[in-house]
Length: 253
Image 1 (spheres, rainbow, N blue to C red):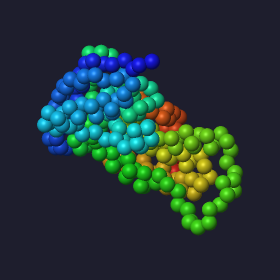
Image 2: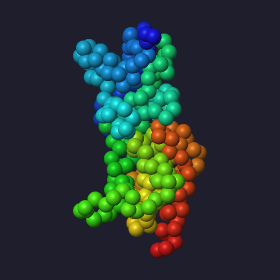
Image 3: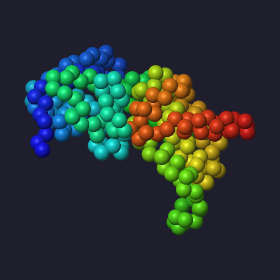
Image 4: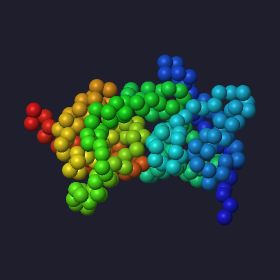
């Protein structure tokens, strides 16, 4: 079955030349877009058109284009990663839009994610949080067998669910407080459920929460929007575990 062609759509996109520059919305017409195209392929088509017209193409982040790297962070029609569920922007297809529709594209809106240019934002804050405790310290050398440390299946599954976080920032962009609690909770929780993470558990929880606050992320108010926006469906139950880990660490001081 042949793909349906969208003869004409309109893209209202945020344009901002630099972090300190004043931004504005600009609307562009895009023609003959297949509904089988991904959203980023549609942006590529638009950028080709802008380049041929001698205009500045839209700056946006992308890398793997298969929902793994978390780079393609766009706020589309009021939704982080667009109107589909459990997908990143690069996995969003044009079949979710209709003929003549105006598609509004914005960058993540959070003080901790400053705009670099257009819809490209600086998510270095997430990396700084990771550096404070999102790891386990181990001695290198011979590789032990995978079954040397026995781990229950339920714990392993829950740790893997948390580890699915790709650090895209959709949780922060969706939260009215720009909270990074779901991201931090996922990174803490994936180690909290495993014996390898127990040794540094207290240090990890305190350090990562402190860095999150230092970088200007807001507080969690349990609205649950982050879980709905997460392309990997990470549960807010991990936030409860983070709170327990943090409280335990502080009480042991």
